Length: 192
Length: 221
Image (cartoon, each protein chain N blue to C red):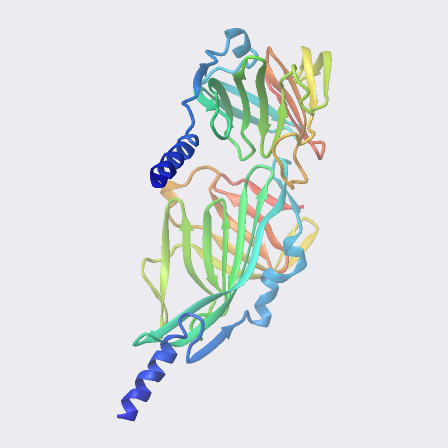
């Protein structure tokens, strides 16, 4: 009798370790209005000029994929969301410029740019640690650009011991990356 | 009766030494002359390089290690000879993700002296400093190597690349002594514009210059 009881208790104890399947929550597609915050088109080329004069051509590779997010164990929900990733690949040995949008939950949009081992958070609806200035207009690359975000790198994500790194990013929703100022004062700016 | 028993006991005792001990042990150190290729303090310091178009990148040490590689030979399950070979390795990454690694392995026999291995963006070479021999090249396009024998190195596939040690090299206003110059000449048909073709490494300093297939040079500041 004792054995049966023990077996029953063990079964119950082990059974309680099982997790229920999480409920899938599909965050749906990233709205077009959000996708438009990154103006790059897949297959197009874009140019940036280095402060010393070299013009570098970048080929845009833009693609959408799905990712899943859950907690570590016995999650109630499993989130399925979209990631829209753009890589501007240079025809010269400098870093690739990456911009990424994603909607991991309904309350926030993840919008980031990174180059080399340093990144910038472009999400304006959260305290992301990147000091941001909003500039009405800025003269960059031989023309005026409106509503420019100037974001200082606070090493919020990414880490490197590089003494030269992308320090400040100028970005707007019409043209994308306008200028990247390196920590040694050299810069890459849009060349149109 | 006692003799076979003794023999068996000795065999068991020796065999039980496993990988830790051998009848003869030897430690191979870098030659004093070559140690400075990798052990100088300056080697581990971050440095800057600028290309012909004035674009600057910094190089920071990513990883370094030094240890003794263990090797042994055995007979009838008994380790007869064990060697501990000194080895040192260092690698760097740059702002633009250029990778550079450099290592030194102590020579293991008179026919094989201390060997340096250097690699820039996946194009690497192994060079015997004592015998002044390019031992192997390694690249995304293929590898070529020589085999070490009792008589010295034997060529399997002819290696078109070369290595020379320059007494000095002047870059801008800086003069570097004892410069290893690797000139990559194999698999040319597979190269792309920025394949490294010339790599210069100064003794006690590290990477000082490299040139890409397109002719673009990047030089230490």
